[in-house]
Length: 188
Image (cartoon, rainbow, N blue to C red):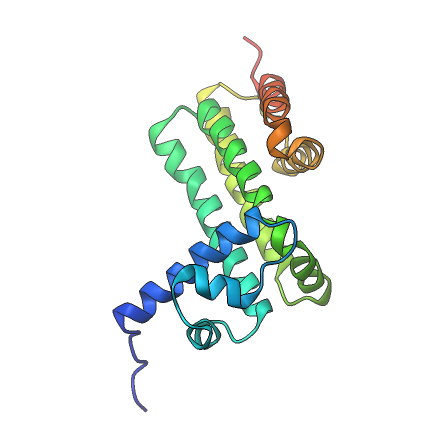
C-alpha cells in the first residue's frame, strides 16, 4: 500500500487562499457568494476550487471548521499573553467576529447543521472547552467567580451578538460584553 501523498506546496497555498477568501466573502455578503466569485477572488480557476471543495457544503464545512479551530486556539494564545479576565474579554470579541462571519453562509450552514452534515455537538464541545479554560484560569487567579458555567457564558454571548452583532451596534456589543465580564468578576 502506497503512503499518502503530501500535497504540493501550491495546492496547499491554493486551499488556504480559498478558505481565506471564502471566509472574507461569506462574512461580507448578505447572501451566499457564488463558487465562481470565490474562485475568481482567490485568483484560481473554478476547477481548482472544486478539486479542493467538491460542493458548496464541503467549502462551508471547511471554512466553519477552520474558524472553530482558530477561535478555540485563540483562547489558549490569549491566556499565554494576558491575565485571565483580559483574555476572556478579548476572546469574547473574537467570538463576536466568529459569529459575524456566518452572514453569507448562514442558509447553507443551517441546512448542514439540521441534516447532521456538520457535527454541531463537537463544535459546541470545543467552544465550551475554550470558554471553560478561560473561566478556570480566572477562577484559579481569583479574578473570576467560580459559580458560572461555560454554557451560561456561551448563551450570553450568543444573545449579545444576536441582538448587537452588526457593525452599527459594535459599541453596544462592547458595553454588553463589559457588563457580562463585570458580572463574572470575583467579589473582593
